[in-house]
Length: 78
Image (tube, rainbow, N blue to C red):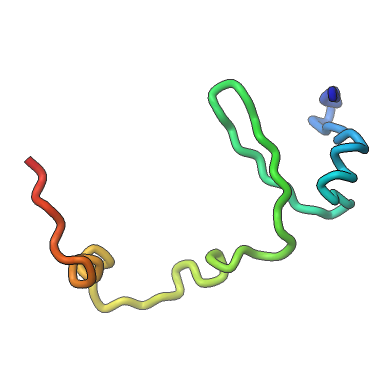
């Protein structure tokens, strides 16, 4: 399937693709850049659960110290 980018940078997604993926007006999509390609993925409505709690934890120690406590100390680098 093929589409063309408009002067405004817009692309029409073929109807078969929209129907297959359930893409409706307002459906969020994400773009992943690869070496010479781009991958478009259907997103989820609303905010990702991790984004809702990002930067809300108030830790008394650095994360690395907590991980070392849980997993044991990391090997020293040569």
